[in-house]
Length: 374
Ligand SMILES: Nc1ncnc2c1ncn2[C@@H]1O[C@H](COP(=O)(O)OP(=O)(O)O)[C@@H](O)[C@H]1O
Ligand SMILES: N[C@@H](CCC(=O)OP(=O)(O)O)C(=O)O
Image (cartoon, rainbow, N blue to C red; front, side, top):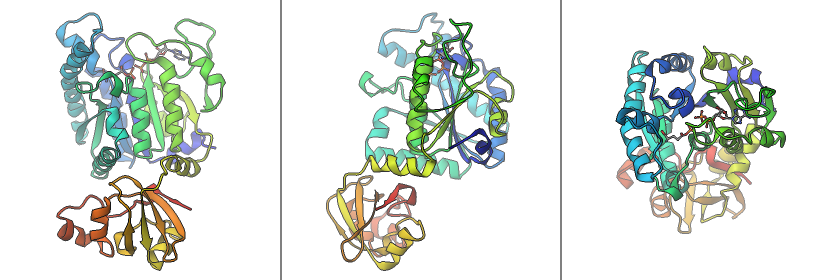
């Protein structure tokens, strides 16, 4: 089971900064507050960690800029506030990170982007690319276009889905409390801080029952739900007090900080199960013996060069079965090219994709992270 002393060995983090924390209870974006988080994140980046930042605060910042005292009720006003505020948010992060020699990138997502398989894969490729080239993605919900049905609504959920998308090791939800308490500490003076727990512990539901502080959406209920979502891909969560100095640094060192919520299963098992939830096969790839060995024994990605035939109609991102030359199923996975393109690149090295297709989406036909051996 994942414990605090495993945290120093983790590589990919999603850090979420909530509205309540970022805006001092809604009083507008306080850019001075960002400096310590940015500097701690820069230190982690320099130590080789890959970081994605999910930041709320656009609506609160937009309200402050327009002098609105109350959070608007109408969706179009909220969307306008978010569009105004997002400018300030991004500018503050860009300034802050550039002082540490780091580039940032703005990534705005709607729920639909993570449900539609093709967009899901594109979002993943883009975020992965940003991480590979050392940029810090700053993610928020694309509030301008999100309709009620398509909203994440709270950024805890968004952050968890980003953690799933990137198979992050750790999700850190920075908030205005010391962590998850046995009851809402704003209303219950007896509330005790929960140091660590398994995400499936039913006591957590009772603890998180209280509402939010007012500015943020969701309170601890959405944080608990987010930790459970993140756990599906084997990611642990720390709900941590953003206002405490060196909070991220302490977490990185495995120190006691906030509440650690750990998946019930180990990361590998959880990841496979998560993938398994996506399995309904739309096509079949026949592999040569070398490719079968690479998957089975080497735990490698599937390259087009090892594919001898392609059957079925499938789109990029759908699940396909990988079979050996006798038709026995070896693995299933999410394919990076649609059936037509897969037919054109089968048997070819990835260096030939550009010439044949006119574009290259991914070097692998199926990435090993998206393969489950059968
Ligand atoms: N069991 C609990 N432990 C800690 N905080 C709780 C609990 N139940 C409810 N809360 C409330 O959740 C708030 C944090 O959630 P929220 O306002 O949504 O913040 P954020 O914007 O950081 O997501 C706290 O300020 C607190 O009032
Ligand atoms: N997208 C919204 C964030 C929604 C929100 O408040 O989320 P949270 O910080 O999780 O309570 C914004 O930037 O204002």
